Length: 223
Image (cartoon, rainbow, N blue to C red; front, side, top):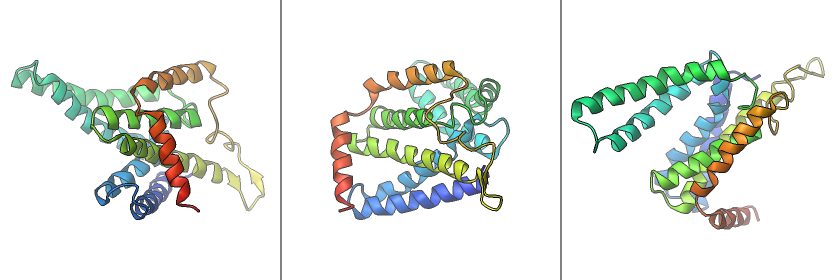
């Protein structure tokens, strides 16, 4: 499979291309270009959240700890004294930065359910829901944020499959087919739990009609 440097480099390049194309097509303002690049790049390393030890999992939980800390502070501020809030925020940071990584390593399998299209859909909808409900972004922009995460996710899965082909020996490696798949055929319960998690996000995402309009608008750019 592709290594960390390959994943993050290709995803960042894809993010820059998408950010530029969307800006030229007037799909989002210039101020959103860096956001789109960051989301595609983040999506490009996200499937490796199930790796026991990797650059990806450390970077992912480092990045997630910051918004979790900010969100926790905003939610708890009306209820806690400054001292208690400081302790609570420290606990949130520790749990997300360290404990969550340990739990993922314990209960997930590399190249399992997180290397699947189902996981990509979950992360995409979660990004759109957070952008729309917590960050108060517009309906269209929230969908674009979700799509950017999905694109990065698909870049990662595609790279893993490409690197599973031995061109010199003209053969497929044993890892072929373990990344770009619908779900984890070896663990039906993981598929069910992730599907349930995905379905619970549906009431929180922006209107689907807006997504349809955006897809139509995007298709016009290719004509």
